[in-house]
Amino acid sequence: MKKIEAVVRPNRLEDVKEALAAININGIMISQIMGCGRQKGWKEIYRGTIVELNFLPKVRMEMVVSDKDVEKVIKAIIQSAKTGEIGDGKVFVYDVADVIRIRTGERGDPAL
Image (tube, rainbow, N blue to C red; front, side):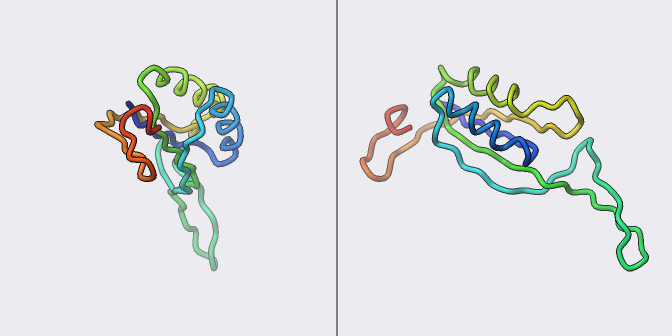
């Protein structure tokens, strides 16, 4: 099992969710976050002073999937989140030792 974490633009969230639903990936956790990378941010004038805003709004999506589904999930995320501009985001993949469904006590892939 793998945990896939994707950081994407907020305006691409619905497209990514639809792409994941199309490949039957339903267990997704979503967080609104702020981040800074190559995109850098922007400058605004606040009370006559120029303020540099380095952190931009992003969305973090997390899901745990079977090893057999990892590549198709990554492909779906990239195809649906990509705009070709700086700031499209990143995908991280982590190993997961185990997962337990609290309600039934199932472990491993059946608990997903």
